[in-house]
Length: 281
Image (cartoon, rainbow, N blue to C red):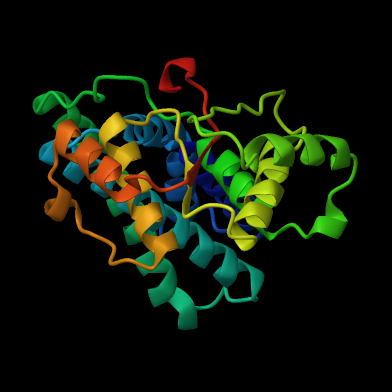
């Protein structure tokens, strides 16, 4: 998230700066100087955004600070867009657009002042990242790629037929009364999620299990959140009423009891996708 915003803003500010220079806006209501100053402040904003990504706790004060950082980043991006629009449509010169340029200069200056205020507030209130590992920058990209595997048609899967057949035999074995754990592992991008998705869809469509759940696991998961996701998917797949968190309790024991009560003596299939921690097994 931080890198995406920072790269987008850096590109737009660079375009706005070059266009303003080409159009001779060096002295026009301070627009170019404000853009140049915003470019210099970009490193500070990038650090703020990375800090915001790392803060995944529940501290209300820090959460409010994070929201203001993101709002300021989007305000700077909007101002850069407006500058590109004005300078790219022949509207840079002339007093007819003086008000627009003056307002743009003020927006840029206020956004930069806001960054300074946020920096001071961070130190004043002792805002620090939450304890525990921060979510990786590419976690959202991996999640999107993993979710897209659910929409891949069978004809599009190449080179996985033998693995699919073997996995299907293991998962759909009717004469196995014990709880079975099957792991699909390998390097990133080899098609693990695509393979598991294909088998999951086939066994669910064939009604080989009484209930099933597919849950994506983040690297910064908590066991309580994971149990809630499993329970929610089980209810959804079984057509039952999806219970709220308050209905099953917030503590670990209540969640475990709710999952066990739902499964009972049923034959079930639970897929945990994108598992990075071996202890989760």
